[in-house]
Image (cartoon, rainbow, N blue to C red):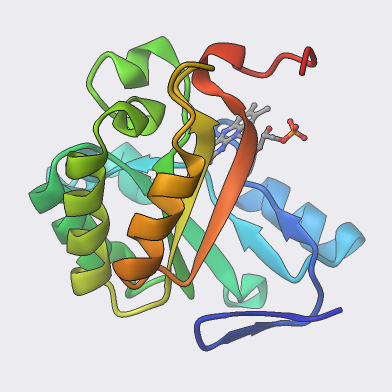
Length: 183
Ligand SMILES: Cc1cc2nc3c(=O)[nH]c(=O)nc-3n(C[C@H](O)[C@H](O)[C@H](O)COP(=O)(O)O)c2cc1C
């Protein structure tokens, strides 16, 4: 079965999920060769670091033409720098993904990743800024919510749809469940 995200046709519905510290260029090339996914995703990169031209971060955006179609993921909680990063990164990739799912303490303590699921007004501003500045279809990666008391998946899906997001990807756990197997 094929899949279409915005104007990007995928040859099948297999997607290599973004994984920080894992889905770098060599890993993606190996996956492409042996797994034949319809879409590969890079590791998440910080929007602010892109705006600061951080060398290590820019290196994380390196890719090869044979990888296309490729999705690149950015994270951050400042609508302006997310917009700036969207402008830059969307020139390289085929699909631009927003991270609103990362549970890592060092990320959420800055208000980034899954912390945004507790502030849907800010989440909406970020999504709109990214969509406005991206030259490629935008997708949104979320979790169910922050915790069982704050399951917001339907609310944010509606915000995303009304803001021009082409697809949402749901990690079906809350932030507090991290990567646990106890559903
Ligand atoms: C090591 C690791 C790193 C991850 N990094 C990211 C990331 O950078 N961005 C993201 O959206 N999801 C990230 N994820 C989440 C995965 O993309 C995926 O949504 C999640 O693991 C759910 O799939 P599973 O139930 O098969 O683990 C990461 C997961 C793992 C295990």
